[in-house]
Length: 318
Ligand SMILES: Cc1cc2nc3c(=O)[nH]c(=O)nc-3n(C[C@H](O)[C@H](O)[C@H](O)COP(=O)(O)OP(=O)(O)OC[C@H]3O[C@@H](n4cnc5c(N)ncnc54)[C@H](O)[C@@H]3O)c2cc1C
Image 1 (cartoon, rainbow, N blue to C red):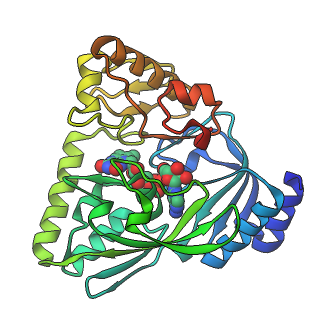
Image 2: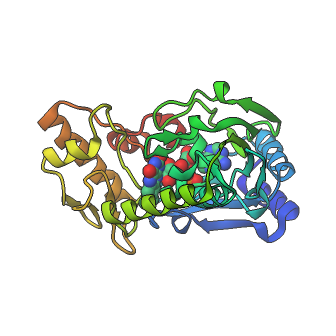
């Protein structure tokens, strides 16, 4: 089945929620990168099942994009279907200490809603601008916590087959900023277990975290930490020590405020970011002997370009 036939079927099933030759850069916090052959927005688990069944029949390449806060899309774009999750998959339901959040629910909103409900344990997420689904794939974390501390189970749809299922925390293999969540699995919903706290204490912690972020992290177009901390060391410290702070390739620059952030100029290029990442890795390797790996995920890049920039599972993202 060719892409035109796939696009036609998606258009019939989803109307204006399916778009051909759709911009991708605007879906990411870097705000650079090319276009997808097809972009489709799912509003329910059954939408994801329909999309998965079509992918299974057609063999089309696909990728899921959440809030794009950890994603670099190649300037050449992505030759396949990009699936995004809409508001129908962003609900947040709180019942006692159990929170059910859609895969598209933004972490800062989940953090604020749970704190306002007098729950504690998710305050850390207020400064992470991703979605629940993206945070599970990355095992997002900060301020001494991460998703493993509250996640109980997820409801997923396999986009390679259209089948849905449930996975427990143990099935997900969450590690430091990584997971073993199968590449074709999209998180549609997650269940979190938090603890009873005090609303005022939780909200004060949230304000403190927001202030800390403002004081310590750069603004502008970026995707948070570029390289995974080679614990117990920090990638930012190694980049700084290697003299790479302020290094620039075309439109991309290593932040002077935080050496593990890269900022891109308005209208800049994703390939500049990838080349800068490769340059920084080489400089850190030369100065410290440490081989940094990318926290950023890549979409649409040639495997060798993604590998040079530090992609951990090149076959997944190129
Ligand atoms: C200013 C800033 C600060 C940040 N601070 C932190 C921090 O403190 N800690 C931290 O861990 N991260 C941080 N990040 C990085 C980022 O916010 C997290 O990695 C976040 O979890 C990514 O979620 P997302 O929805 O944006 O995912 P995307 O960037 O859209 O995608 C990332 C990966 O997740 C996959 N994915 C997305 N949605 C789903 C889904 N529903 N199901 C399955 N897979 C999915 C994508 O295919 C991709 O492989 C920061 C980013 C920025 C810009």
